[in-house]
Image (cartoon, rainbow, N blue to C red; front, side, top):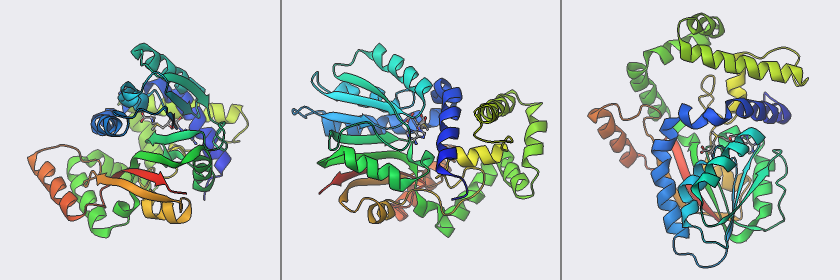
Length: 320
Ligand SMILES: C[S@@+](CC[C@H](N)C(=O)[O-])C[C@H]1O[C@@H](n2cnc3c(N)ncnc32)[C@H](O)[C@@H]1O
């Protein structure tokens, strides 16, 4: 890997400490797309459970997963929220406490290498939009496997599906449609290729308040990284984006080798797991609900390539 595990963890921690509480306002599409899915899964898996359970939500952020599903848990259940960033975990605790759910909650600060829980102490490990930040799958899934009971379930939501990004037809099809709807981003991709992205970003930031804010955020991240002695010289915005979303095929360019392939996860890290449920969607990647044609075309592609949508949601079972 181009970037060290330690650098990826530190950049993620600092970035989410600073960006933290604004996350949900900045990414409404995640809320829109995943709320219903998690709500449905929560009801199906936990709605009728009578035995006492412990669940661990990894990378809770401001509390998206508990806010969707904790209403299905009983008084005796334990819901552990966790994150690499203490600031975001504090925001999560405030948001969750406001809802007055029946079950018990604990908040666990993670360090990115070891989960501070006993072996086989959880019935479910779940996460939404987290795996694309993980530098080292080996360490990450080994720890998950350690804390999950045999018979327990691992739920991974909202991740880039590698088979989409490696599929020539689907990828080129997306790029063509995307360039029609998002010409500015297409120009940005070209600027990235010819090495003028940073310069253009700074210039355009003088005109656009949104971009100005973003540039400020990345400057703050760089400042903290230098102050803490993690880097000597500031990183470019492209590098920071590539590092923060280290497993994302679209962070700071097209990285075909990145993304999540469920079968690859099982064969490399989780051979004692089987797939209980897999769905893939967003067959036009982030070209969302633009018009009737786009909706129809996206559904058509979903029918033709059911396992090759750009985003995946999977439930796996630990069988031994
Ligand atoms: C995209 S946000 C998703 C938050 C929340 N799950 C949601 O769906 O809104 C990713 C979260 O993962 C956390 N994170 C990043 N790297 C992590 C790591 N190595 N271990 C655990 N959490 C991590 C970030 O701090 C951030 O809160």
